[in-house]
Amino acid sequence: MAKKTTAKKAVKKTAKKVVKKVLDSTTIDEKLVAEYKENQSVYDKIVCYTKCYGGYLLAVGAGCTFGANLLFGTALLLAAGGWAYWQVCKCKACKVNSKTCCKESC
Image 1 (cartoon, rainbow, N blue to C red):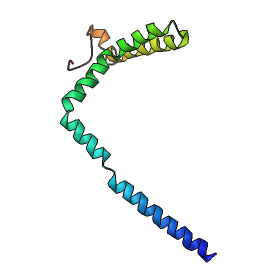
Image 2: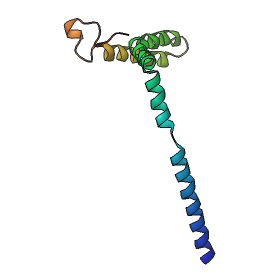
Image 3: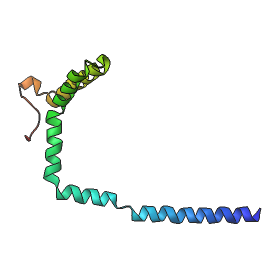
Image 4: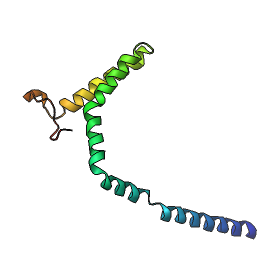
């Protein structure tokens, strides 16, 4: 019984060392933040264009998909409609005949 206890303690100690080593060597968050700050304007422009033109991409995908799968094409078409509503009508821009809510343009 004593051997099992010492073996468990040894495994536990080794596992703790490995976990600590992995956690200490993880710098992915810092690397991502540094990369974003270095190329912030590029990433912001990509996000802006995705917001503005993502619905069009969904609608084209729906049109191309209708021939193969009606249900999936309909789902993409509904997603495109939801995207359009989210982009235009989320801040009551529809009521003031504004084209978009975006304070900045791409």
